[in-house]
Structures are given as structure tokens and as C-alpha cells.
Image 1 (cartoon, helix red, strand yellow):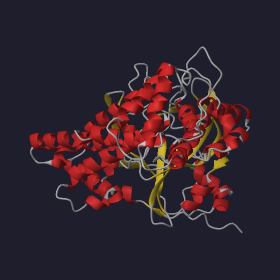
Image 2 (cartoon, rainbow, N blue to C red):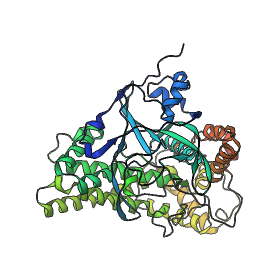
Image 3 (cartoon, rainbow, N blue to C red):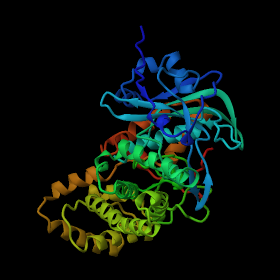
Image 4 (spheres, helix red, strand yellow):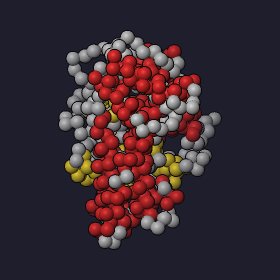
Length: 486
């Protein structure tokens, strides 16, 4: 006998003013099939894996059945997309509700691709299998790397086609998040709602994500600072593993501090701050090297949305916001440099550390060195015979680096252990991701995907089975591009 699935829903978001959402049900599909289920995540949510694999369980993932206690809705939000403000909302996503876990955590359960909503703006509200599997792979890789992220619980195929440039197999992703409240949610409240609506949203978000500041003298100013702190730390973590989000619009910045919305994202191979993968980012707005600056631009839009709550006098509110945001640079640089020190086995601080790091990065850029493999080679002292490692300038840098390690109390063995914990041996290489997606989508073969997920689940294991996943792609005359997948 199959046990109950374990859904334990609350629906606190639906208790906000109705301006923030529209109640809507998913559109049923013909013949859903479960293609991947995240068993470990399911268990942590208090769900029964066997029940989720049953027909009833699959019907929930497909939107064919509403689980007991759920209250489906589509969230309203706005956002700056490539710098231009527009009204948005969940055009192809439905929030089923908030699962209360055995640890008493509150996690959003959202279906991505379950059909039209009141915010679909002419779209079909559907998603294709390839992009949903991509989000599953990358979000789970980010989790394994220790980076705050939304996660993927399941992907089902719908048995129905999706029409884009070509006809594609349809799919629905079940996404799990601390919440789906975005900078764009606050922009929507400030632009289209009342001050009371904005205050209700802010109070709700503080209570849900930042309860420690509830009693602060100006909790809304503290709120701005806390969100800024989390974003500075998050973007630093992205930079430290070579992750490129690809579409850092304000509606894709989560107030919780999680990475959200894996569209044209990818990991960098050869190091270059100018790296862009997204097919629609023709000007490089969201290039790897620009991500820290875009983050503070987005935070400035968040601060603008809070002005009415910061102070009754707008000039004073602007000053308070500007003073708060002026601290972002130091927060990001501090988090990034701390992480770079760890990648080089450095425990303490010296004034010249930043110059040492940047000198290495300049040499890596000069020789188009692979970001992940270079730090792996330094970790295991296996500098191969490539252009970077035979450069006399690298040898000079290496001498300075070793001298720097000698000046700290910790042993070389301790430095090696720190580097192993800080430098992943494997990332989801773009060509490996494409290989897995092609096998799954074109051939119905999920074994390649399963093996990739197994290998990237422990990126710091530095195991022999990871070696083949560290190899670089075959040189191509065309740069690698990613697409939003809408």
C-alpha cells in the first residue's frame, strides 16, 4: 500500500493583498510521464518518494491534480529587463503553496510550464523539456557547490508538443524555493500598489526571511541592508566558480538571496571577464565581469521601491538608501577576496593579496586558461605543459604565491585541504550539459543525464570518475550560445 505523499501546505502568500497574485489552476495535460525525481530533496521536504512516483503523485507534478491543502496562484511582479521597466508576472508558473517541512521550514512549491495564467501576455504558459532539464541540472549543481539556489524536485513530460522555432516535447518542472519574492515584486508594489500594499509586502517578507530585524528602529532600512548583504555574498560565490547567470533582470533577483531563474545560464571555461553566453545579450550587459555591478544596479531599483517606507521625507529616504548602497562594494569585494584567498590556500589577510589574485587572473586571461582546471591544477600542484604554466611571468607569480603561503602559520597540508574544499574538481561543463540534453530530448535516453547528475553531485570529491568531465570541449568556429527557452 502506497503511503500518503506527505504534502503539508500553508498558503501565507495568498493572505497578502489580492493585488499581488491571481488565483489560477494549472491546465491539465494528456499523458504525463515522470522523467526525473529528486529523491533526497523530496525526503528533506517531508515527502514520500514512493507516493510521488505513483500516478497520483505524477498528476500533481503535471498540474492534473491539486494536492490537498494547496491554493494555486500566479504571482504578480514587474521588473527591469535589460534596463527597461515592464509589467510582468508568472506567465508560465503556478505556485501550488508553501510546504512546511519536518524542520519547520517554509518552502515554495511551484510548477513551471503548467499552462496559461492571467500574466501570460499572449504566451502559451508551457515549457519545453530541454530548458526544464537544464534548470534541473544547473540548480542542483549550484546546490552541490554550496551556492544558495532554488532547487528542482521533479520534471515530467506532458505528452503534448510545444511550438517554438520548432516543435518540441513539452515538460513541467517542479521548483522549490525559500520564496519567489523578487526585487520586481517590490517594484510592482511601488509602481502599481498603495503604500499600504508595499508595507504589507515588506512586513511579510521581513517576517519570512529576516525575522531578526523585526524590532529594529528602522526595520525597512535594515531590510535593504540585509538583502544587500545576501546579494553581495551570492554574487561573490557565482564569481568564484565561474557561473554566469545570463539574464540578471530585476525580476530574476530573489529577495531571499537564492539564485533564481536558470534560463541562458552557463559556466565559464576559459577565463575572460567579457564572457557572455546568452543569445539575447548582444551588448554584454550581463557578462561575467559585469555581474557584481548589475547586482548593485538591481539593488538600487529595490531601494527606490522602498523609499516610501524608509522615511516620510523623500529626500531623507534617498540619502538613507544611498548611504546603505554605498557599502555594497566593500561587502562584495570582501566576500570575493575571502573566497579567492581560500582558492589559493590562504588563511589570513595581507594587503598585497588582492594584487596577487588579480595578477593570476590577468595571466589566465592572457593565455585563455580554463578557470576551473587552473585552480584544480594549483590545488594538486600538477601544472601541465600549457601556455599559462610555461610562461616566465607565471613562474614569477608562483614564487610569490609560495612565499605568501610560507608567511602564514598554517601548514602546506592545511592549505591543500582548504584549496580542495574551495576549488571544485568538476562543474557542469556546457558541452556535457548539451550532450545530456540531446540524449534525453532527441533520443529519450536519460542515462547520460543521470551520470552527469551523479558526478556533479559531489564537486569537491576530486574523484577519478570526475576526470573525464574535466576535459574541455572540442574547438569550434562558433562561440557557445545559450537561450532563454521560453
